[in-house]
Amino acid sequence: MPTEHKTGPIATKFIKRFHKSHRQKTAGPATWWPSQAERDALAADTASRARGEPGMAAFDLYNNVQNWALGAMEAMQDLPELAALMARAEAEQDAYMPGYPPMSPITHTYFWPWMLYDMSVNANGETFAGILLSLGREFNLAPAFLDTLASLSDSRLGLHVWEERHGDRVVLREMVSGIRRDCRAGSGYLGAPGEFWLARVLMPPMHATEPALVFNTPYVISHADLAQWQAYLRRTLPSTKIDDEQDAYARLMKHGLTQNHWAEYVFESYSGHTDNAIFIVGLPDVDESRPHSKVNRHR
Image (cartoon, rainbow, N blue to C red; front, side, top):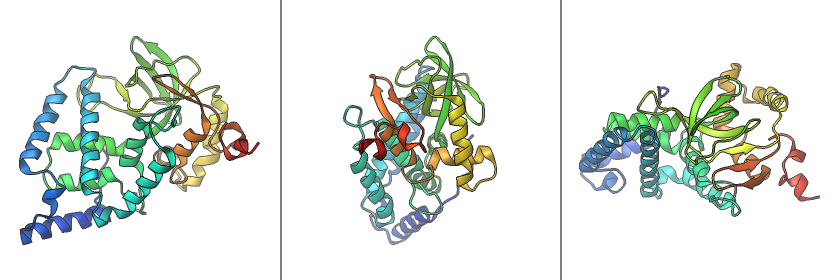
């Protein structure tokens, strides 16, 4: 179930803007928020995709909602309430040039979820998706659509140990929590013993018997040592200032210790790729272990 969502200050400004324009009968939000007919079409489309072929319906549904969110963000990008978020998103896009290796190890399947669901510029941790979720609840988007958007908004990266394969599925065990999940990777990568995956794993919004979903092209940590990663987490989690280990881990994986914590790690640790996986090496806090860190670039 999605976590309880609180409306933040940016969303509050949008809601006030919307109600003001409605009272004054100006065009206002009509240029950036779906009409009633469009909202009805979204609801029908969500229901249709949820009834799709088991095994594909969840991917299809999540991707459809994400594409809508990207379109909504583009329509709203010039509004002053979004100025700070848009400036940061544009700066990160310029810095990492998302695509696929060899151009950049920051893939689109990593970058767009990071930008929509994790990236924030205020103390409330308000994200693009959180703003859209608040607006959707205030202005009557379909409940099933909003539930899917909420699941995406709550999502985060995780560190997962590859355990076994069953046909087109893999079993991943998340570090810290120890939760084992039967997963299907959207990229089709099936993995191998000894691998660690840095991945955004989503539970299916429909079809409760479906496997979990590896939403991004997995970042496969080569030559990973479990003891070294456990030591990294012991060193790092206290820096979140959160006492509960599970909550501290979730905070680290969603927001990092710095604004671009995981993007910078991926960028500096890239070591190779196939058409369905990106291979990385090293630890986030050991500069010498990452091939493209500043330490190694200057050697």
